[in-house]
Structure formats: C-alpha cells, structure tokens
Image (cartoon, rainbow, N blue to C red):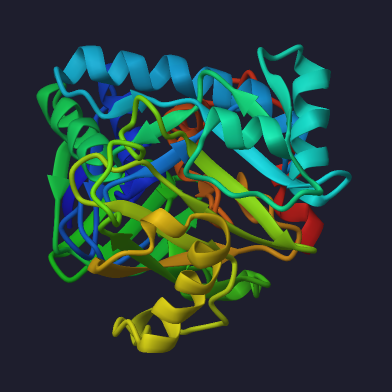
Length: 376
C-alpha cells in the first residue's frame, strides 16, 4: 500500500489540473494521477487555443460560472507568472432567431452583459475579413478572447506542485474502490489511499464508471491552421475576434485570430462517435475540404495554405451539459465533466467547485444542470 492523502485527483487535463491547483493552495494533501503526461495532445485540452466568452448561447445559467472562471484564470496567471489569456473580443453570429444568435442574445439580456447587436453589414464593417450571409446577425462581446490550454494546464500543475501536491504522470488508473473509510486507487505504479477521489478522466469516463452505464459519446474533432492569402494584418488579434458562426440550422464552425501560427478554424460537433483508445488521428483531405468550403463562403482571405492540423476529442452528454456531481453510491467520489465540447473556459471555476465538494463545502453555483441523476 502506498501513500495516504486527503484527495486523489485522477485525470489532470482541464478540470483535474484546476482541481489539484485549488486543493493544493488550500493546504490539502493531494495526489494527481494521469495516464499520460499533461499537457499533451491525446485528450481534449490541446490545440494552443480555446475560446472564452460570456454571451453564452448554450444556456444563460452558465454565465455566472464563466464570470467566476475569468477571476480564477487571472488568479492562476498571477500565481504562476504565466500569461495564457488574450482578450480579442468575440462574435457569435448566425441567422436571426437561430440557435447561436438568439441564444447569445438571451444570455446578454439575462445578465446585462456589455455587448452590441450587429447586422450583417455591421459585421462586415467591424470585421472586414468576415463575409456573413445577408440574413445573419451577430452578438459582439468585448471580454471574449483566447485561452492557451497547454500553458494553463502546465501553470496549474506547476503551482500545485509548489504548494506540495504530488503529481504522478504516465500512471494509468487501473481500478478504484470506495467505502465509508475512504477510497483506494490502484494504478500501474501502486495502490494509493485517500479520503476523497475526484474522477476527471474525460473521454475515458465511461470506462472508469462502467457501473453507471453513462450515455456518453466521444467525438473526433479536427483543428486546422491556415496561412491567410494574401498575407494580411486583418487577422491580427487586435483586429480579428474569436468567432462562432451558425451556417445551417444546428450546424456551427468557429475560428481564432492569427497569433503567429496561422488562422485556426474548426467545425463544432461534426465528428461521429469513437472509442478514445482508437481515435483516428490522421487528418484527411475530406476533413480539410469541409472547413475550406466554409472558409471560401465566409472567410475567403483565410483560405490559404494548410500549415498544421490536429485532432481532439469531445466527450458529450445527450443534453450537452457537463457532469459535476457526487457518485450516487459513494459520496466520497466526485465525478467531473465531461465537457460536451464547450468546457475548457470553465475549468478554473469548476476546479474550485470540485475542491469545495471534496472538502464537503457547499459550492457557490447551482449544480442541478450537471447532476448525474438526469441519467439514472
């Protein structure tokens, strides 16, 4: 038997690293485990950039959580000395009354967020590189921007270590057992005991929680970086915002300014269902062609040479909401995420929530939308 801790955190991606950071700062004896060596490119939290935004089209109830995340990301930047947030402004656009535009309008109205409502002509004037359809409208928000996921995860783990956390990388979780006396976690590096266990294993959640038979699907998503043609400053972060665009009912794509690696573009929720251990990581001509079709239509000057590509995974629930809850049979086991393709921005705040749960504190947010009970 090896070690005894207050909390073991299994999975050190977005949510797990943030939880380890919070618990270590509070002086808890914590152990973090990951089957790989985060930050890495084998899960869901890589690709150099993630969008953070307040005008949350998915659901207004997320807005207070993302506002807390802004605070906690700033705290982590101060603690670590690492800058991983860049404000660019953000644009959520699509047909008037469509899922994205109308959802973003609901959130800004519900929370009185700073914003501007833009017509298609106003979008073209504000962001000349974008060519929206004439029936499109947009919600502009000034606080949106880019998070660098690898830098953020690395900073969280470094600060956690500095506060005494033990981190074991390349250490796969083999099994776990919980009882009234605590939890026992078996890995390929030994067995460890703690009072609490946080499971933040992302795409592998279904395998780790076989007994719950969770209705989770793992999607393959392709990330692409293009060189703008002709070379232009139109995509500099000072001039080009992060954007999401609904180009057909329920179908969206998104993009980022050029921060030195090209313009990053990707489809949202287009990837089919996969086994996370057998994900096809080869990017095909069809993958690239699907994005080029949209670039030719809406962002033609970004449709240059392909510079780089990558794949990542979304782990999705049927309703698109997260899972943040205690295990129904074991109150000392806390289940974190999956993120359903829109979770990274919240990780700093969810790490705080999970740390509160691990300490038997009442979190400051309504977790009912993230309950496991909705699947039981």
